[in-house]
Amino acid sequence: MASERDDRGGNALPRRIPLGRSRRRLYFERRIWLFLWLLSLPGLLLTLFVLYQSAVEPVTCAIVIGCFLIVWAFAISLLMEQIKHPLQTLANVVSALRTEDYSFRARGGRRNDAMGDLALELNRLADGLQSQRAGAMEAVALLDRVMSTMTTPILAFDHEGALRMLNPAAEHSLGLQRKDALNRNVFELDLEALLAAKDAVSFPPSTARWLVRRSTFRLQGIPHTLFLLSDISAALREEERVAWERLVRVLGHEINNSLAPIKSIAGSLRQRLPLPPDEQADIESGLEIIETRADSLNRFLQAYRQLLALPTPRRASVSIAGLIQRVAHLETRVPVDVVPGEDVSILIDADQIQQALINIVRNSAEACMSQDVLRADRVPLVEIQWGRDEKCLYLSVTDNGIGLTNADNLFVPFYTTKLQGSGIGLALAQQIAQAHRGSVRLANRTDGQQGCRAELELPLT
Image: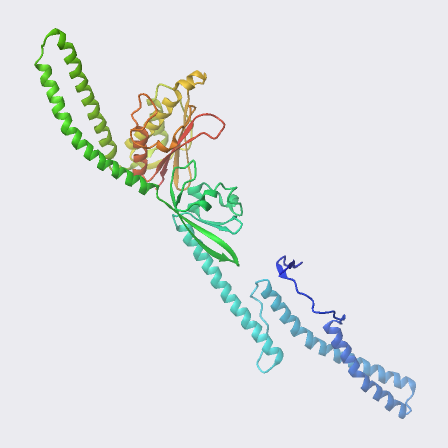
């Protein structure tokens, strides 16, 4: 059905199709006023007839007719007031109901009276609508309270893909601002992956994985889609850690069973030397290789055990500014610039967080010292800064290296693209952050410069 705009309210109203031509009619008050004056004609004519039959003088006749008209006009005005006032009152009540103002009531209503019955029914209608509105407002307030206290991100989009609802958890997790995000299209917010997601989704540059649950509902008759996101990154990482731990236990047991006798036999054979000169050099070289590889493999296993056996953090109040200064002084290969910020005290395990920062800064420094950077005549530089919001502290380490080339394997233990890298640093930093209920994120710089930005996020409480 076609619709048109109401000039006063701006709401879409259904267009009524005229059934036929209608003649112009007078206003309701004028019609009543005209009918009442028409009712005066018989009395006026009868008065004139009586005066004529009585041969009353014209002056007296004019006075009588004038008095009759004045009295009749006064009676009409009183009657019109009795008709108009209740109708205007009821019209004001209906107008208030139309604008969702339920504070107006019609007074003087009583049963067995046509106008009184109408007033009572309108009052009952206003009471019912006010009760429904109060219930709806309480339900919306309860919904807002539940959404604001939930740690799970919740978003709602209308049928055109515009964001209509989101809770603080969604603002924090997806980097949105309510005042800027509401009513914007899903493509403008870079959340189109959410609409196409079937099971899980991630939003770069964050490495978090979100399990997506969706449902539909109607708000003011308009269909909406509700998205509820559950962060499964921690669960996936924990499952991965458990799988690695089981694997290391099996491999460690089997390799140690082989390493011990190999190392022992190699040592025993070395003690049985000398042999003929032409064979001694080859045997010593072979035994040395066996011992070296056995030691390397043992260090490999010990490093992995250290990664998996991270102790529980011993929390104490620590000054972040002092901790960052100590970390910056430990890196001497490249300049480390510390951007001054608010000195924040936070409950953490200082040794573990310092080790995590050392690993991140070391990784950034090695990225700055790559041959590609040196050939580009760029001065290697690492910058550390920090900031906070109401819930979290953010420590960021920025370098001007070559940037990330394979972000999928950043936190895979022993995966490295460096010749002398061990592949333990970032994995250990992530383990320490998770033990503090935080996280580590890495992404290429977005400020027009080449390099990488690592961010360590720690909760303040």
